Amino acid sequence: MLEKELRDAYHFIFEEELLVEITKFGTLREVKAGETIIDIGDYVKSMPLLLEGAIKILREDKDGDELLLYFLERGDTCAMTLACCLGHTKSEIRAVAEKDTHLVMIPIDKMEEWTSRFKSWRNFVFESYHSRLTEMLDTIDTIAFLNMDERLMRYLQDKAKINKNEQIQVTHQEIAYDLHTSRVVVSRLLKKLEIEGKIGLQRNSIMVHDL
Amino acid sequence: MLEKELRDAYHFIFEEELLVEITKFGTLREVKAGETIIDIGDYVKSMPLLLEGAIKILREDKDGDELLLYFLERGDTCAMTLACCLGHTKSEIRAVAEKDTHLVMIPIDKMEEWTSRFKSWRNFVFESYHSRLTEMLDTIDTIAFLNMDERLMRYLQDKAKINKNEQIQVTHQEIAYDLHTSRVVVSRLLKKLEIEGKIGLQRNSIMVHDL
DNA sequence: TTTAGTATGTGATCTTTGTTACAAAGCCTG
DNA sequence: CAGGCTTTGTAACAAAGATCACATACTAAA
Image (cartoon, rainbow over all chains, first blue to last red; front, side, top):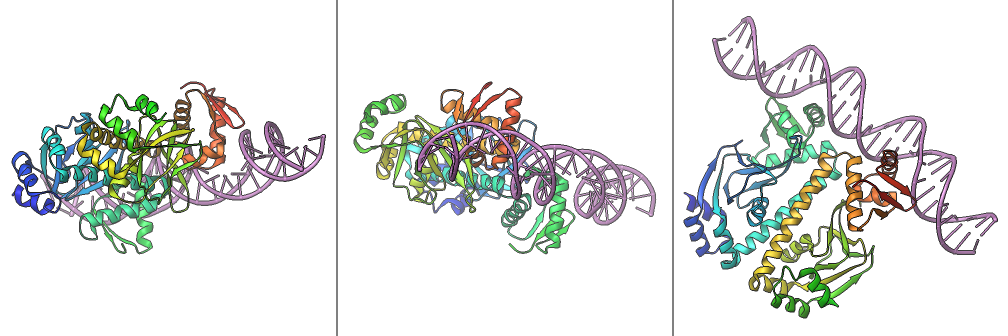
């Protein structure tokens, strides 16, 4: 099962020999939606590759206030975690399963070995850093340049994409946590978006109309 | 001169053979304070290593509004640029010399070659990605979790550190651009900080008291 | 030394977002 | 179906920041 999912997600990227190595040294980890995969301050002893599902990456300040940074999907890895592995430092972020997900966990020492042995691995690592930097820029644009209603709209679009349809299962309070605002503000803006015909509201779920 | 500055800034990090290679294939570039080194949309054909001086990295939205991301100092490289080089994409950021600065420009093909040849180079590249990700997290924390007065205070502290003293040459308008707010807001908050005894204000310059 | 340009100080007002408070609706369980 | 919990709706008010308007101060060039 690990092998099949691994090939599905990564055969375009990794050479055969590396895929064999991953199957040999990686271990499958299955997490249910909502479970925390890595928390802030955790020492990270292995690096996850996402086989199936989705993960949301969160930042937290000293008062416990959260902020969603971005989502990871199949074929992604968490560059933050990667950076922690290589730097032997604690995790700066929290990773929570957005859906039921399957990961392969790669031990750090293998990671380092593969970095010298496989060009495709090196490229993958660089590529991961690159996408994560780009996502972070996007996050910064969003919080620095957009108003809450636009941020909310983007959030709903992202969520819809990950769930592969327009029906999102989420409460206003959860959205408020992710966007680092209050439930009241979210409810207000959602109602406005509903009146504008952009979304439909039901208890515990939102239907996104025009993406 | 390139060689001396290179050794001063990088001899702890790079092995002798690599230092020689850099001297051979890198070219020195000198920029005056205020000059733009890389702009948004530029194709980057070589990667800069900072020898001396300081650079500020800015993000811009569609309306031309700016936001300071972070500063780079001696021994740093711009991981964003690096990512662009490796990904062969356009620059997502603007880099402006904060002081008069000296850079070595490394041609892309050498960069790629060194990645396989020198372990110290690989580590440097990973390390750069790591620090830049960390800086970006810091930036996100700042804009997401802090009020303008706290952001302003941090900004002044960073500036003071870079200029190696507490006297900062800057106008309120420039600060407003960097923090993506208005001059009026900056003036008001600066005045408040002055009344609190934290800074002293003169035309075109600010004295930071308690760091 | 006058003048024009640049930089700063500050009041007044508006918009956006945050906070508090409470009502009503939906849902689950005994 | 009654009571309790969760979720949503909304009014009223507070706070931060943005915008406009204008006065004043400093500086450099004519």
